[in-house]
Image (cartoon, rainbow, N blue to C red; front, top):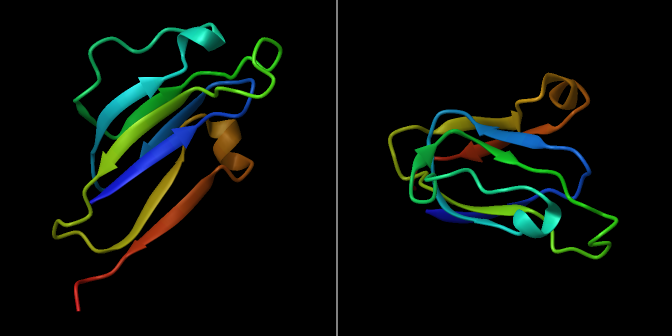
Length: 106
């Protein structure tokens, strides 16, 4: 089990997507102060993609940044490489992606 906090430090939206498992949304924070609203009724839900709205760097030059807190459960039968990326294709094409390697228990 891992608890991830994902922040958006950009002035544009990012749609975070994780392959192979669903994550539990624990919280959506600092959305209103940056001029957006939380997605309704997704706290506590299991998803594989979540929107992180843009950061207002003019009103909040030092943060707080829009962020989500997610619970990842890698204890299942899936092992190997788990891809994650921004679902906005231009962002993905520019390298906004990565791989998590999950290994079997020794």
